[in-house]
Amino acid sequence: MVTSSGRVSGVHRIGEPYLDDLPFTTDQLVRLDEALTDATRKSLVRYNIYIGDFGVDPAAGADALFGTTPDAAHSVLIAVLPNQRSIEIRTGRAVAGRVTERITQLGVTAALSSFREGDLIDGLVSALRVMTAAITQN
Image (cartoon, one colour):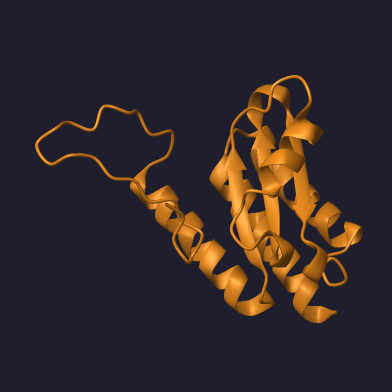
């Protein structure tokens, strides 16, 4: 389930161990959640983050995923594909006038330095902050 702040919430049975190895610490996830919440409140744009793999065609994968995100018309998808060394950003129709290609490029540029150092969370937080600042200045 995706919460209103953009956080993905999961459930497992009481008494059963949680065996999945999470790629991020709790502190990193809290930091990302706070950045998502802050960005959404300031810009009035819903942000969705995806970290994973889309196979051979990252652009087609991002297009397919974006349509399934909550409130896609009013949102932005930032898809990071570490194994493919790719970042795909999609914007909804209702926010396309405010979230321009220039703004998405600023977000990618802000994220790249941290991504190169292997810090996905810091890169995502930087992208969210830069994009939000640019959106609210327009």
